[in-house]
Length: 64
Image (tube, rainbow, N blue to C red):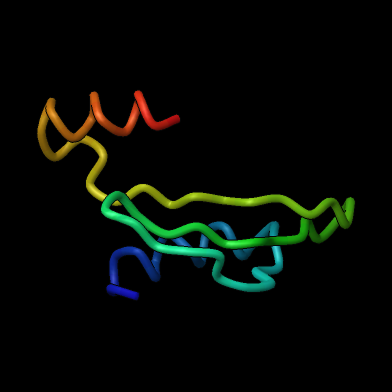
């Protein structure tokens, strides 16, 4: 992971325990994580450089 994305994952890790990486793509990474308080298992996608260009933003919004 790049240093910037590593910093963003640290914020996620304050409330979630990252269990495994599910995948990576052109827009970012997806992990399986467990909420530390509720134990609920979720998938979290970290989208990098979302606002780098209007084109990137539009494509990511369509994907979601």
